[in-house]
Length: 143
Image (tube, one colour):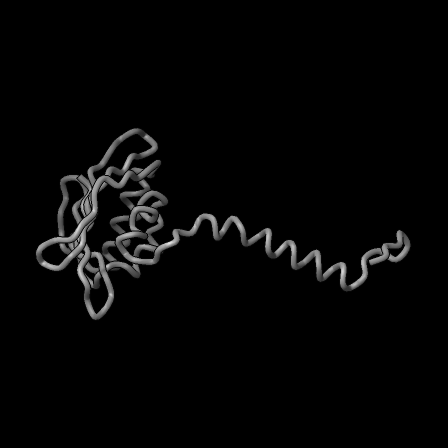
């Protein structure tokens, strides 16, 4: 390709630059996304980032939530409000997975520690069961 100071960039140059910028712009997005899409594997990342919107598809239509000393059964939309309020009051700094496994009743679970920006820690557990071919969160606890 020839460059001329008087002509500027030709169409091929602009397309090449646009292609390179598109590739560069997509690199950070791919680096942040977890490799696995299973509910059990995604939840630690979603808890660490407090991404309630991304959690919702992994919730059963009704689930049990325990936030500190409050425990209740609620709908997915109620859970969304509760978690948004919880994370607004306790912004996460980190989530450390301690253990994950399978229960005798056919479900999966994970246990970990959520550390907030204020230094508070919450023992966190999630119970997941399969429903209609999809693994869904049936219980979420922050104690």
